[in-house]
Every structure is written in structure tokens, then in C-alpha cells.
Amino acid sequence: MVRAGTTGRRRRALGSLGGRLSFAASAVLAWMIAGIGSPKAHALKFVAIQHHRHADASIPPWKPGKLELQPEEELHVVGADVMDRMTLGWVERMREAYPRLSVTMEARASGTGIPALIEGRAQVATIGREMLPAEEKAFVDRLGYPPFAIRVATGSVGSLGKTAAIVILVDKDNPIPGLTLAQLDAIYGEERKRGEKTEIRTWGDLGLKDEWEKRPIHLYGLAPPNGIEAYFQARVLEGGAYRSDIQFVKGSGFTHAFNVAVRDMAAKPGGMTYATLANLEPNVRPVPLSENPRGPFVLPTTETVYEHAYPLSRYIYIYVNRAPNQRLEPKVEEFLKLVLSRQGQEEVAKDGVYLPLTPNLVREELAKLRN
Image 1 (spheres, rainbow, N blue to C red):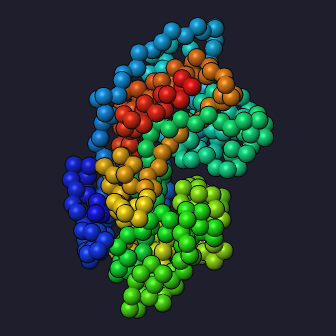
Image 2: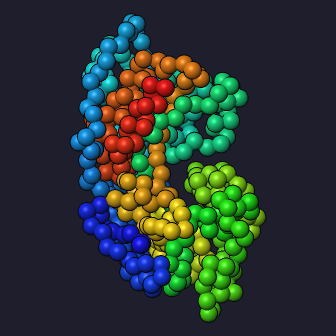
Image 3: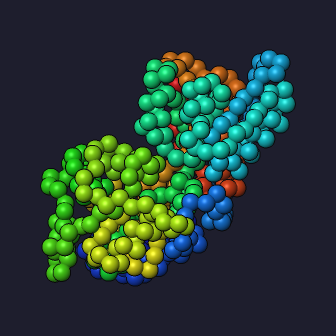
């Protein structure tokens, strides 16, 4: 079944893949999710509130541990400006618990976090996306091991400025009922690392008939390096190479690159682009996705992204410098325990766009601190 809904409290079945989906309804549904979908969407620092979810009450509260502090000891947090609201909440709670520890915060951009770790200017790097391959290489080249990553929140349902879930957009009248990640790999990639036996180049290769059968799939994307295309390559292509005939798009003025692609699709039937729900326009619709051929095929909603039931839901991260087989600095470990506590996840929830972690995810991340 394909799952969809306007909020985490409301679901509406769209029907099985064997039946005929109401594509207009699914497009309108996605357009309404979390109040997003403006055709003039572009990455801005301000994003309107999209949800009112709280941190799960079963997440254990933070009880500050004892820290042996030296006079004028500091804890520097450097990184993402789009995470500044929740980061300030964490910093203020840390200051309150340890008034003799100088806790500072510099929130300029995600790209400032890893260099600050490498140079020793920060003990904590907040990254509002996945780390880029070049960032990891720079860290490894300098220190000989990768940075230690902790998932601290779930990305947004559909905000360009807040690590949005990635969607696949097609023409609104395209009858494709859903796609698997293996099919996407065979569409966008050269190596088909997910095991699809043959390359997929036309809509007929996906089983469509009539006027769609011989129509080529015209692909749009972003030129690297870019956080979204890097995530798509890692998550969907499993690190494999992209096809060479993808049409790279660029933004124009206040029009985001994905909206440029969507508007180009209006004149060229048969297109496909990865994008976000913030790029949705009347001529396209999002396709339900599945991790495996048997489903479920899922659209992104507040609930499906929070639960990571939607396959291309994303995380945001904190990275720190921890050498292999070494414990974290006590003040850094305590900060991460705060972030992964009920209080810390409530600071995420207050952002109103990023989503807090589920209790299971919190347990998984806390276990990393003990290993």
C-alpha cells in the first residue's frame, strides 16, 4: 500500500500499486503537507513553523554528570546557522549546568564546522546536512581517522533551508504509481549497485504503456559538490557514478535550481528530478518510494519522515574529534548526552521545522558514546 497523510495524526490510503492512483489528489496532498510548496521557494534562513511535535516523553531526561573543570576551560560549538535555534538552547542548558565552563557558539554555516574541528578551534561541529566527501577527506588527511558522527535530529519534511527529505518529481499526469530505490539507482546511476539487472532509460522500462512506453526519461540534477546530490549519490546510488547525460540546473535570481528544472519539465514531457516538497509546482507531483519491491510505497509526511518510514528522510549531525579506541573528552560527551536527552530533543522540537529523534534512534546514538 502507498501511505500518505497531511499530518502525523492523519493518514489516507492512496491504493495499491495494482490499482490506479489518484495522482491529482496525491499532488495536492503533498502540496498541503506542513504548509509548504511555494513555487518561489529558495533556501532562506527563516522558515515558517511546519510542525508542533514534541520530543517523545519516553526519552530519558538529562541529569548533568560531574565534570572536573580547569579555570577558564572552554567548550566551543561551531557550525550551521540553520541549526542556531536548537544549538543556542543546548548551549544555554550547558551553561546553566556548568557555570564555570565557558560554552561558546559560532553559527555561520555547515561548512565551517569540520574545518574548525581540524584546526582545533572547536570541540563540537554542528552540521545541518550530511558531511561532504571532501570534508571527510580533509579531516582524514590531517588526523588519520574520520570524525565521529552523532545523529542529533531528523531533517525537515520539505524546507530547502532545513535539510529536507528528498522527493522524486515527475509530470503530474505521469501514471507511474511508485518507484523503488533500486529502480532510481538504475535510472540515475551507471553502476546499478542496488542490483537492478538492466538499465532504465525509458518510461516503458518501468512498465508504462501507450504514449509513455517509448518516451525517454529526461533527468535533472545538481552539479557536484552539493549536499543534496551528494546525499542522493550515497543513499540511492550507494556511492556509484551518476549517468553522464543528466541535465544540471542552476538557480536563476530568486528561483531555486529545482524550480528551474520543474518549469523546464512543463515544456518537455517525460522529465524526472530529485528535489524537495518546497519545489512542488502545479505541473509536477511527488512519486511514492519504497526501499524494496514489495513496498510499502510511501510519501513524505510529518509522521513518515519523523519515523523514517519515508526512504529519503534525512538526519542532521554533530561531528566531534574522537580518535579510534579513545573515549570522548568528558565535557564533549556530556554535551552530547544533553543533546540526546529529552530536554535536548525538546530544543530540536522547538525549532518547528527540524524533527526530534525517535526514542529508538536516541538509544542507538547514546550507545555510540559508550563504545
